Amino acid sequence: MRVVSEEDWRERLAAAGELTPEVAGAILDAHGDRGSRAIEAVSEGRVKEYRDFTVVVGHEDEYVVEDGGCTCADSAYNIDSEAGERCWHVLAVDIAERVGAVDHHDMWYSEVREFI
Image (cartoon, rainbow, N blue to C red; front, top):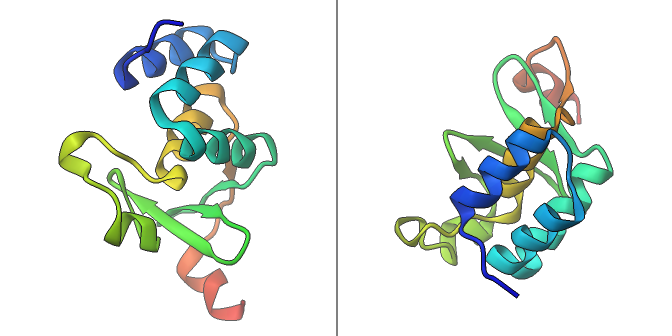
């Protein structure tokens, strides 16, 4: 099995417009468990875009993804962004954007979050 670079799977996903088995395999090759969790989140519709932020709904909390960064602990403590690593929340946003699976909300997340 050929290992596919992150850029390659992103380009292939954008071109396909859907998560094909080949592209899913490439994501898993490049990102392992993080890729698997990202694919799961996208398939479950847990990537939400508000006027101010994009949010990925995790199992325990919601995480703001902005400019390729994330508010999760994995990003803060385990990710080497200079080496191209990404948490699964950032990967989920990248996937969802390329396949048109972002759930758009015409409201401010900062206002919604106050009520949660």
